[in-house]
Length: 457
Image 1 (cartoon, helix red, strand yellow):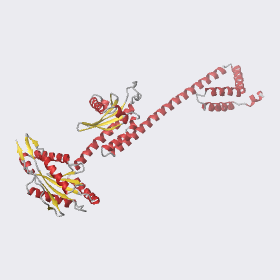
Image 2 (cartoon, helix red, strand yellow; image 1 turned 180 degrees about the horizontal axis):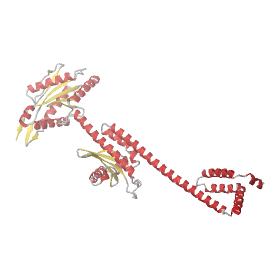
Image 3 (cartoon, one colour; image 1 turned 90 degrees about the vertical axis):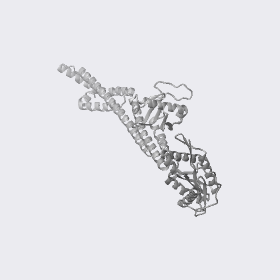
Image 4 (tube, one colour; image 1 turned 30 degrees about the vertical axis):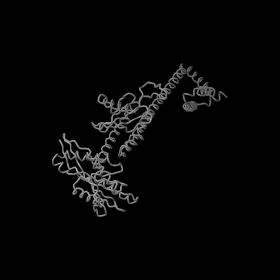
């Protein structure tokens, strides 16, 4: 049977068998060594007859042609196996490198997506509350489990924009302000303070700067490499952020810087359009809008509503004699007195020039008279200092109350203005009530001692 097998076996059959064996071996991982050894032994047992035929054939050729064919075949086989092993290892190394590069590209893609989402959320913020929401929602995606905090500066004062609960317990307000101040000083010495941040104590700090304007500091908690915290209840030491993570945080800080600056400008513009910067009262248009809303509310609820129109006595003489700076000082002082004297629900509006409108919800005429007399006494009790001189200013006030079902702001303002004119004509420094829908002047209220403009050295 062996001779018959030798007669029928062809080299092409051996090549096909070797290829099949190679395919089987490639399916086996390097970690399956016992299985591979078992397969090799099984292959030797299975193919011992063909191998014997090959060896006999090699010996015949060696005898006929005086060649060392078997050693050459062994050497070639060993070299081929070594070459295949090296190719396999090289292929595995290339695969691992490609996988690492793909992982890096995936991480960069996720960072870009996170930055785009952060930028969109910041763009939708129209006030500081919107910025707080954007920072609290998106910034943890860059910091991970590390604590973070953001301080913004306005008019030389630090304000906390966002802080995580753990950091808020571990660091006091004074600690945060000190760290932020040090970070701003260090940014001038470190070129990477903007891009990769600078480490100050336990925080990696990113100054928030737009052009040459400092708007705040963003901090990320980071323990020094290799340090251990032994305090009970403290968090374990953290691995320092790598360069890529720090650069991503630097880009996020740049986006936050622009958003903080834009929001501050937007709030400032909105505040200037709504509030008079000199007196702190509402401007005319928003004040009239509030009056319309309060008239509708008074009509629905049936509650009283009173309007006071106030005018500074002899204001033109103040400007002509002492200059407009003195006039501005008088208006600003009266505005502050109104804010301090009236309730928070009362609306203070600068109607124009030296005229003010005061909207007092849930206030009948008698209560409005008491408010007017209180305002006059408060203003007279606080003289104004200007260039070493003491200026005592007075005001005249006209009072009107909304009629039942009245919703026209111009009508009630007209009645209050008519009462103010009568107060001026009656000698100034007094308050007069307009009664009736036509603005008729009611009985004269108690007249307080009038103080015209007085100036003492």
